[in-house]
Length: 378
Image (cartoon, rainbow, N blue to C red; front, side, top):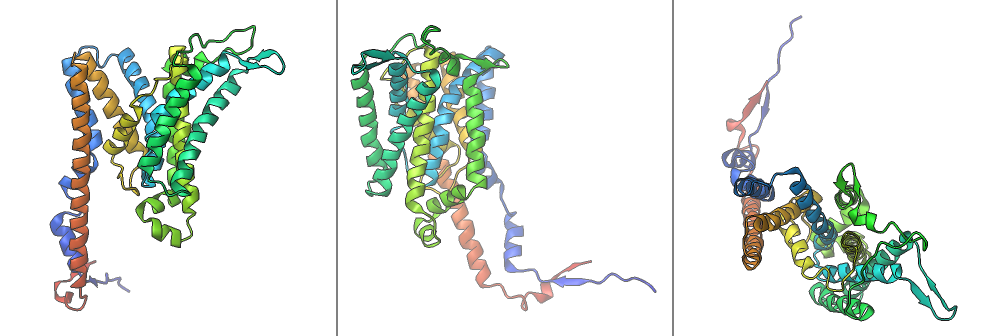
């Protein structure tokens, strides 16, 4: 008994013809999607030619450590942006958390007992992180419960947190945060100044937080709620997503990340100044935008944010190495941000046009009519 192959006639729809003609995902779309990575490669090539030390191991480690500060901030900002919000207060939280650490390490006067308490480092860290997270909670409540626009709410807490840092410190810097063995509060300097396997702790902290952020956004119900809320808040609410809770939690995450950065910087500098973190929010937003996240919410990922942070960091340090004026550095970074937004708009426009074209083609799909022009699969 012989075996025969049966030919199956599969109709070729208008959609499949359209996708063949347009190449599915065209080159322009692919280039736009990979724009951040391409920009990073271009920066590395250009600055490696302009500076002999740019690719030195020590310089790469130093630049990556600088990137880590902004990357950690940007990871927190990503959660807020995915929801469709923005957090302008992160820079002030950086300064405030450092001041809280300085106050606790310097000793807390308890007048009723007539003693000065010197809490251990783990209490100092928890206290600073708790304050940063609390500011995030305030932001979330203002946005979720009191319906204040995110820009206005976080602009207000930007000034409140910065003012609080100045009031607590009386405008002065807290020096010598190393503690003492006699008081049992040493170890703070290892947070930002220590190294593991020759790599600064700041970089390890960035890696750990990036892994956690990727897991949360990809593998948890909260991550799904986050994308749903940013994509279409009303539809997400009808589907049972706890909108208010998501809004509050994303701002708390942002405040937490900002507090971590404040601790790292205070530890590395061995001092805490109330002005620390000024304009940090702009670099964080820039990293998120360059990394491909949509400011209106619902689109973005951790790897894109990390690449965006490296673009901003390598650009800043590279311009310093080649001797570009600090004033021109600001202009160039601003131009890069504007270009990133323009490219993002171009990508969205191309995708909208393609979706509209596919929708129009689908209206004319008729399997019976396309039978004569069928493909044969053996």
